[in-house]
Length: 140
Image (cartoon, rainbow, N blue to C red; front, side, top):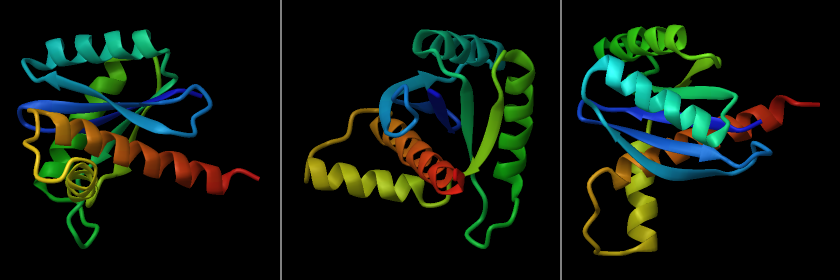
C-alpha cells in the first residue's frame, strides 16, 4: 500500500511518499500553504499522482506526549482534510522528526545550506518511515 505523509507547518507542508510496497519512505517536496481549500486541492493532486491509499499527518504532541495547541490545530486540519479526500487520513506522532531530519541532512551534506522546505520534506519522510516500521511490527 502506498502512503503519503504530511508534516504540517505554518508556511509549508512537507510531503513524503512510500514505495508501492509500503516499506520505504522518501521525501518528495513541499506544498506552499495558501488557503485550506488550495492546500487540500494540492494534497488531493499528490494523492492521485502517487496513487496513495492513505495519508498520514504528523501530530505534534508535546515532549511529554500531551496534546497542546499545535496538536489541536493539526487534529482539526486533518479532520477537514479527511472530509475532503477519498482516502483515509490518520494522525501519527511526529515528535523529534524535525531534529532527525536536520541530523540526516547534516550527515548527508555537512555544512551545506538547506533549500527552503528541504527539512520539512525530510521530516515528513522520517515521520512516514516510523509509521511504516510500526505497521510492519504489528503484522503477523
